[in-house]
Length: 120
Image 1 (cartoon, rainbow, N blue to C red):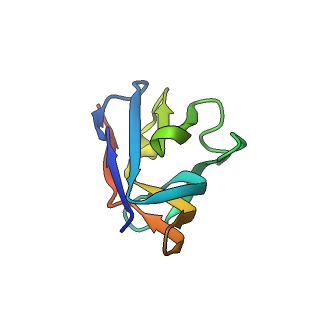
Image 2 (spheres, one colour; image 1 turned 90 degrees about the vertical axis):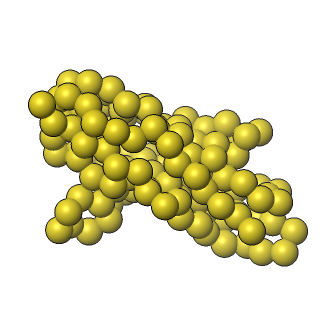
């Protein structure tokens, strides 16, 4: 069974930085794309950034120039470096893995979420 485990959330002051990590475990052969989404209270879940196995990235306009997504394919791990954080970045951040191929399955998975709070 595939599991995604996130870490790195917390409380940070405006202008500060945080680094999120998400490791996928299980009998995984390959993962097409990994990414981060976020959901603030009262709002829908939205895309933050994604990265393919080949390294192509996509970012929400609101985080371009401040957030950087990266990936270690050998470790099935994705990272999100968040700089110049703003209060509006406050949300639960969810890791996603799409096109996950195991010995018996092919599909997508979500992590349990990690809280990021930007406040003075």
